[in-house]
Length: 287
Image (cartoon, rainbow, N blue to C red; front, side):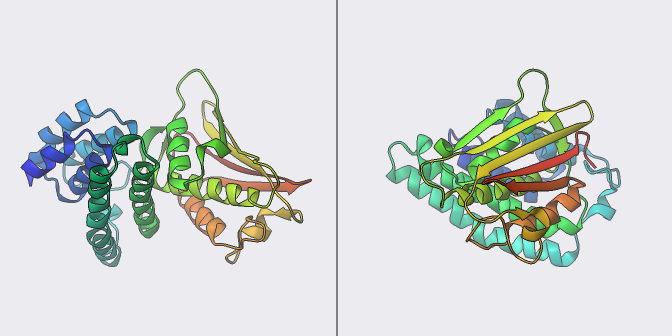
C-alpha cells in the first residue's frame, strides 16, 4: 500500500493526491503517521493540507480520547449501517473517479488548468459531501478552516461558471472558523447552485453575489441573486421538497436545513422586488 500511496501523494496533480488522502482516511494506521506528516509538509493545496492534518491528529490520538468534535471516539462512531453504506459508496465510486482523472490527464494536454479537471475534483468533493450527509446523525467532524477558502471550494463544487459569481470576502485579519468542512461545503454549494439557477430566467448575464464576514464570536455569509416570479419566504421554499429556484422545484433547501441543524447554524431568506438574499449565520468556534 505504501509505495502506491507515496506515488499518489507525490503526484503533481491535486486529483491524484486527493485520491491518496481518501485512502489514508480509510486505511491508515499509526505506523503511517510519518508518511502523513511528510505529505502534509509538502502539500500546497490548503484544503488537502487540512485533511492531512486531521488524519495526522487522528493517528496520534490515544484510544478513547476525544475526537475533533469533542466526543469520545467510540461514542462518536457512526452506526454499523452508516459505515457499511459509506464503505460501499466509496468502493463503488472512488475508483471510477480516479480512472476518469487518469484518462482525462492522458487525453488532455492542458488537463491541470482545464474545466474537466475542476469538474472531476468537484465530483470528488461532492462524494465527500454525500458521505457527510449520510453521517449527519453522528457528531460533526470539526476542524479549523478559512471561511474564504470554504466559499471558494463551494463555488467550485456548485459548478456555477466563475464568471457568474462575484465573491466579496472581508479583508484583513484571520477569517478562520471551526466547522465540519464537508457539511459546510455541502450547505454552501447548494445555496450557490440554487441562487444561480434562479438567475437562468433573468435577462442578461446577472451574477450571484456572495459576501461574508467574521466577528470575534460569529461568522455570516450572504448569497444574493435576482429572480423572476412571485415573492416568497424561507419557510415556503424549505419545507417539503421545494426550493427557491423559481420554476425549478427541487430538494436543495431540505438538505441545507438538515445540515444547518446539525451544525447549529441559522438560515434565513428574504425575497422581494426581484431580489433574493440567503443568509447563513453561525458561531465562529463551532458546536
